[in-house]
Image (cartoon, rainbow, N blue to C red; front, side):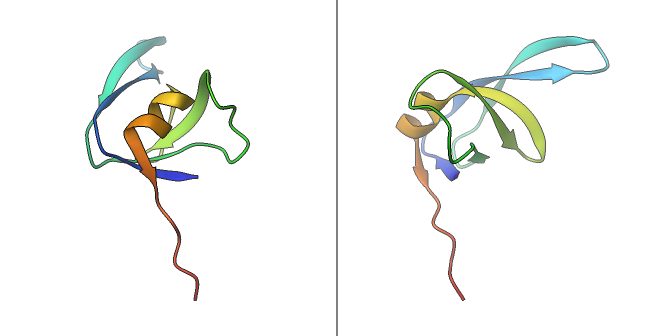
Length: 72
């Protein structure tokens, strides 16, 4: 499911260069994809700008709104 963020949020990204996880900030207006079967709460894998990140599912749902794909 795609969400456009109405507020910024924190996420965790893995830096292969530094071989560690770091906290990043995703800005308002960004589009984040979480799995359709993501739990209502808890840490989930997500995609932002083509990169795999970890976010709290409830943060994405609370701070964003679903992007509905156009049907052709």
